[in-house]
Each structure stands twice: as C-alpha cells, then as structure tokens.
Length: 366
Ligand SMILES: Cc1ncc(COP(=O)(O)O)c(C=O)c1O
Image (spheres, rainbow, N blue to C red):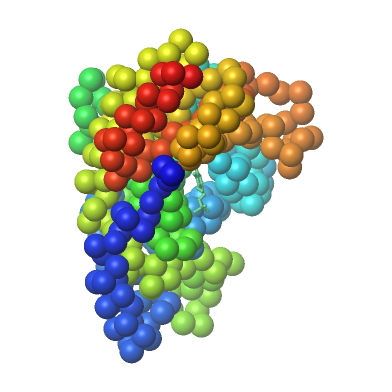
C-alpha cells in the first residue's frame, strides 16, 4: 500500500521530545496562550520573514479574522480564485463581504492576472490570491495592479509554508508570508507544516493589524476582562504549539524533498493521456496533480495497485452545492477543468524512490 501521507513516519523521531514537553506542560498548566505559543509565533515570523505572527485556531479563522480586521463596509468585494478550498470563499462571507470569483490560468493552479484585471471595480476592497498546491500566485503583478488604489492584499498561504516568489528569473529574498498586507496559514495536520489537530497562524509586517488580530483571536481582549472588540475564540492551543515548534525545524528539509519528488514526476511521467500543469518555480508542492480525461479508469488502476490518491478539489467554488444560487450561470473554465480532470499523486516527503518509480511506471502504462 502506498500511503498518501505518512505522518507517523514523518514525525517519529520527534515524538519523544514532544511528549516530554507535553508532560512538562501538564505540570505547568498554561494550556491557553502559554509560552510555547509565543515562542512558536516568534519562530514562525522568523521563518517566514515577517515582523509579526499571531497563532489562531485554524486557517479558516485566520482568513476570516484577517478580513474582519480591515473594518470594510458590508458587501465590499473580495476577489478570490475559482479553484481553492471552500474556506477561502466561506471566510469572505463570514466577514460580511462579497466573494467575486476569478478563473485560474490555463493549466495553472493560481489566479489569472488577466481575468483579475477585468473584475476589479470600485467596490473591490481586497484581492485574496491562493498559493494553491504550494504554487505561488504572482503577487508582484497583483501589487502592480493595486498600485495606489485602496485595495488590500491578503494571501491564502494554507498550502505554501516556505515557498518563495520568483522575481526576474531569480528566487525573491522574500518568502510567502512576508509580502502581502496580511498572510493566512492553515496548520492542519496534512499541511506542509501541520499540528496534531486544528491550528493556524497569521503573519503581517503591519503593527496595527498585529495588535488588532491579537485581540480579535482572543475575544477582543489583550488584558483579562478588558474586551475592546467583538472578537473570536480562536486561540492556538499550547499543546499544538509544542508540536509545531518541534516540526518547524524539519519544514525546509521536507519542502526540499517534496520538490525533488515533483522534479522526478515532471521529468518521468510521459504519457499522452496525462497532462501536467505548471507550478511556480519555487513551489513547495503541497500537492502534485495531473490531469486525465478518463479519471475513473485511472482511479480503478490506482485502487488495484494500492496507490492512494486525492482530489484537490473535485468542485470549483461556483460548483459547490452551497453556492448553487450564488454563482448561478457563471463559468470558470480552467478551474472547472482542474475539478473535473485532476487527481493528486502521493508526494509524501518520505516516499521511497522505489515507490515513486512504481507510481510513475503505473502512470506511464495507463
Ligand atoms: C487553500 C486553503 N485555504 C484555507 C484552508 C483552511 O484551513 P483550515 O482547515 O485550517 O481551516 C485550507 C485547508 O484546509 C486550504 O487548503
């Protein structure tokens, strides 16, 4: 059996030290916003190159709170890509704003810059690109489009911990998480950096956003009983911060391994029935997807050969049942193509070369 992701194997050598720290926490008892939370915030802001980081309960809340912190008029427009996880769209609605969908580029997982330009209106207050699969959206171009308009840039980095942008054919000095006004990360277990439960973190270089978000995640309060805002109960647990502090040390190494596997797939999957997509140069490959017209047949073969697979995602945002009426009669052809034809291959950083070769051979014989 080839697992999609083997977290036990990935973290096995960390379990002892994590358990020791949890044992100490049991004695100390600072389960809520304990020392490990502030230390993880410091470590993650250093990792991402941002000035500030605010831990929170999950990536969906990170996005919702980031949008809420802007205090925008109700129903201001937020531009998001049509292919992303449901949370990106839900966070916009939860913040009482209006999601406006933009298609992805052809055979790419990120928002189309040309289509984006067409959707900007007087009501646009936020552009919210998603670095889907770890492939980086063109933030430099988006910033140019924004120019000096009063539009905020918030990026959904749930799948892109440690990715870099490419600027003039070179790796930018800035990592994802340090470029937009506010950046939102999920730390869900299966992410490139994941906790052992739900968790999230927000990064920013802006002190005002930082101060506001610290309050928002803690019921509007910085000091006990002093509630200045109608906030959320969305704190990062101390136990999860212990896990994340331990795992952060391995993140860059595992991202490199993901990149190596992706390079192998790129070079060695050769079959006219399979279409590969284009990833940004410094992608961290949260997922590696291929497109196939006869997906059902490939699924059968994968099942027979015991190769695990995934879908990211089988529906574009406009196709989600909950949005049946909301985006009625609107089509996003590139995003819908990804939904219909994509299948995600295992890209576990610890996948053996023998298993990678077996997956590739199976695909080439398909
Ligand atoms: C692109 C994207 N945005 C947002 C989220 C939401 O994060 P969470 O599950 O931590 O709420 C996820 C992950 O699930 C995601 O992949």
